[in-house]
Image (cartoon, rainbow, N blue to C red):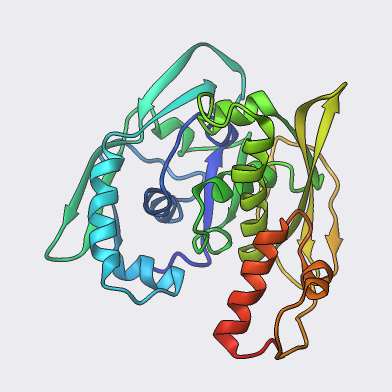
Length: 294
């Protein structure tokens, strides 16, 4: 499967739906979607195949544990649902929300180390024959992320890629990520979910992103994301049906050092929107891998 350079295409209604998938479950779904074109005609009888070898190549991971992880994710995926609030292609609000499974069937073939799946019938209109109100981006932008929340946030930002800014209400964020009953304090939601997701987008994708909370009085009501394509990067994709305009920022410089990481280094080389601890982990990890950051 040669999907690394292929685009993932989703109806905007699916991007703004409510669901929770784990990282491996996301990788399975996205690897299948990367095999489609937005104008393809598919049915719920169409099978798609993803192998552990495919995942390993795309994530640059050489681990035997991928096979067991893929098998476990296959079992979980059968039980995962998604709640649609909007109609495909038009983006109009549904009178009654649609709750559907992701897949009609999902099989792990242990002897081959592959997953074979068919999308659920109600899911097909959100994946097939998309003429408007859709978002696309290269699979390679998200496949190495280790946070499912980061993948979702990246998609939500790509809806507004031509604008470079998006405000997401705290309520919508909780609904879309199915976190209504988690992290009742917005400060905890920001610290444990939003900021780590922004850090991963900065680390793994071609976007440079920062987030700032927006208050109404003393209450945080929205998260404001400002983002642009990293200078020198080529990010082919975007959204049809969202605003206009675009931006680009300079690349974050490499750390020219082969010594102990200092507070000054972390402050200087932290990415926009990255927490102190996230920046420290990222920079220290890079030093450990390379022996230096030259």
